Length: 306
Length: 297
Image 1 (cartoon, each protein chain N blue to C red):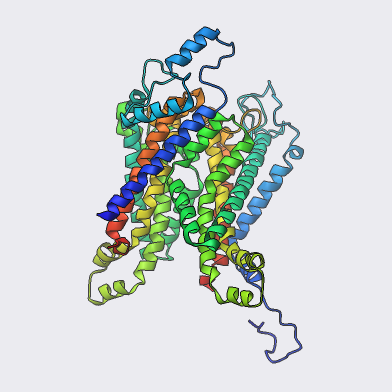
Image 2 (cartoon, chains in turn orange, red):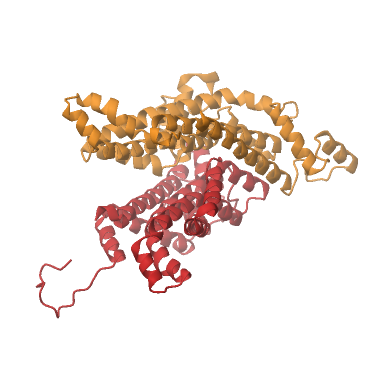
């Protein structure tokens, strides 16, 4: 219990650092969101700045932003005048979470599956195929893989839509999920294979085999539990990679998600929107890391301190 | 190890000892994938360096009569031309220049920060070490790519800023590796022996610690370069990195992806070259790890 509490407490300063960094980077940047080719008349400019509270001292703006965040208010968007950042993000979130969540799920299921199969057939053709696939997944970035996949399945074979969301039809989700999951499948397969090979040669596996347990049970019940530890600790970075990847995948496939808002916001210097997305993703990733830590604590008794 | 054709008792034959590095080099040379990758990387680097001399076309010259033309040897457009009528071959090699330069320089930045930070934390130890590694843990949990993008948005799309930003992101793992290595070496007998011989503290670090942590560091460096190249391409792909008329693989791939139905060569050539480079670096990294890993011996 103390372990849980300590971990939870350590997440808060991390989040604060993220918010502070993002905030001051935004405000110290040269060039404002309302810079135009032609300078605005002084009075209008003053009114605009006042409307967005940009005329107040920096520390004041910072405190305002923090207290807003605590209430779930990310401020107004500079670009989409009629929307608040929170509304825009709520718009994009369902698509982003579906794509990201399913990609993570695929990565874990296929990664662990392939890695285990490769480890059980070490140095066979199966093993080499899986490892070659994993190398491809790691070396070919998702923004190359995604257009190539669309070119193949969308344009030449005309099996799947090239882009768009189609209000959430599964054919529209397939390619984005595959492109997003592939590098993670590759990493997890490599990790699983490595740790599985190590675990399979350990004493407790030999004992399990010696007492006559069927090979399937040895693998699923005994070996997998130990072999999954490195995979579990990789889930945090994997989530971060999927979140980052979703930015480019959503842009390529034209999916109305949070990641695309981030890119548009960045190109338009829509500071509150960009900051909102960064803070949100940071919070998400920190929470996931926390959960991974707790899960790890449950799985590895060595970490549970008295 | 004595060469088999020599008599082990003949004392006057020159039996040379092999150093750790010679051993590693021999193992690396035996790894075909790594050697092939090294050759590929050398070729790509040479092509990138001598790019302007290889083709009759400058990288920003617009050929109005040949816009978005497929690969054509008659006019010397080996990769075709882009949507602005510029020669893709030269542009791809210019992209290689930028991408490789960013990869190497940003990795160098991360190397310097990471090695110093990790060595200090590991060598000093105690509370300093605790605090320094706690900072690394906290930074590790951040979605750094978003911050790099923020930096690029805010302070202009400047290549030099990109080196610093990417280097500043990648040093964390380096620091952890170096610290771990330093800790594991610090109390080894050969360090004690050096101390007993009266070697100074800096002497120990320079002569004994650094050469012995170098192996894992080199492996990690070769694996960081492709990661940095990938990140740079990622940012440029989004339109937030290298700006026209300069180019990088990310920019070219972004344009290729946009026009892939009409002009697939715009996507295929830069994407292949990028993938090839990333593959090669990964193979060299894996080969180096196998060559330098003492567990294998």
